[in-house]
Image 1: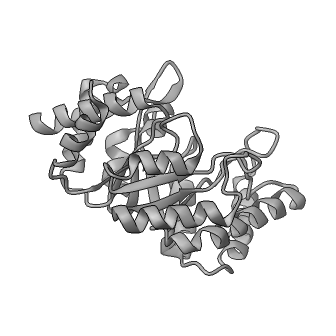
Image 2: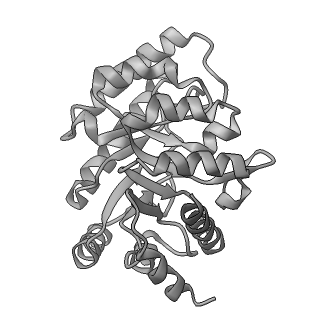
Image 3: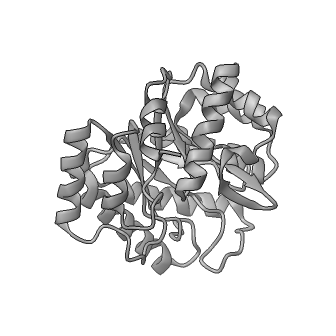
Length: 269
């Protein structure tokens, strides 16, 4: 298969939403990935999954390269903040580190004018155990978020991702801060939540829709791992969605498979 020809042909599709994928499709750093993907997508999800990872932005040259690509190709960026940060941890030192890193990343990436920042409000502590006192966990989250919002950023620029706990637990936090929602379909299915209920309840407030497959407890796979019923349901909702759909996969093989399935199901609907 001619990969470039496939991407170019797919981009001609008229879709109501902006199509995105991650900055880790080819085995390289962020800038080469963006350079490779930018001619074919509306937006790139810049993935900073590990706060200590060497693939995070490290210098102004990378930021300037991303700015140049954005201007040249007419694409936007959204930033996925690191997931190994625990804003609701019992230990103040852990929370302070998380706040500091998030504020530093926001400050570092503001020149890119990202559409928003996707943030995990993890129920787990740094040891990987779920907090049992939900009220106390939420109180710590709120204090951490207040500190983050002291940066040059509006609530609407933060998108909170659906994770492994019932999302209604934090609806009040989203409303109070004016945050939007990152509806992660793979997580909803992986954790056996009701997909239709989540779509009905949250899609109208969703700025980014993470689309990926899951199988045998593993997510971020090609969407051909989703069932026919799940795909049909998702496509029916995306027909009236004008936000961002990010194919949140991490290989060229899974990206091409996902695009092929999306095209096939879109034409069938």
